[in-house]
Image (cartoon, rainbow, N blue to C red; front, side):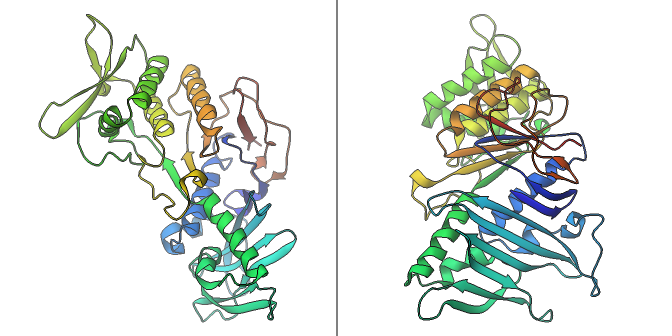
Length: 385
């Protein structure tokens, strides 16, 4: 992911692996990096710019000066690896005085496949041109300035020439890589009370954790048993299993089973760190069929990926709990169907990779096994200054 000019970041390149931790002190840009990732994902899914970035003006770099027309903005992008080779997407957003996408570029194998530019500030469109390589080398046409042009290419490109097929393959690779993001922010205060039984799709704040456990207990006993093992590894006291109670009709409450003669502990009696730990473990174990995300229905299941974004992954967790979660994430994300990008503070001494590109936010560590206590398969990107 590239944050060329976004919030506190300038010329920052963040390498992302199957499990990535963005590490740094408060104010180093960890949360804004996740925000940029989620924004690209939502734009790739076809969402409008106003819905994705309603507070775009707050994301303009503080030292950015307006031009003669009073315009300010930011630039973000990414490179997605795949069968089409490395495909690069760069997006320039004008935040002031009017929110719009003023430039977009999709490139692969040294060739520009799509380029857009704002020609007439009075119109709500940008002029786009995409690679054709037929009788007409380039096709031109207007595109709306509040939508990602790459997401519109499958609707505008016929796919009859070799060049058009190249454009479609690159666009599809970027869109598949970006879409299906679950931004997870467990809120323990909402996870303590019994919840109604519904469709069993885990929400962003995980307040319906007991409802999801009710579903997994009946639909996937093996996954439910693995979650119970995670509970035993990260919660205080003995844990022999996970149980469910129905305190009233239509309501369900989750409990930790403690073994013969010990009774059971309702999740509402657990500490905040334990509840966050359980929620994050459940997110990793369930996948897109249970999480409240829109799956890529048009993509074969074998090619689908899900990225979990966890801001403050270490919030309230002790070293044992974080170690268990990272071990679980590494084993699950190894098959390529799930990725985890989380943020942690500088209190965790896992260490970072070698020095990488430096921007205003600090240094981005190179991808690789971080070692130093983080565990194998974990990439650490150090944003500390």
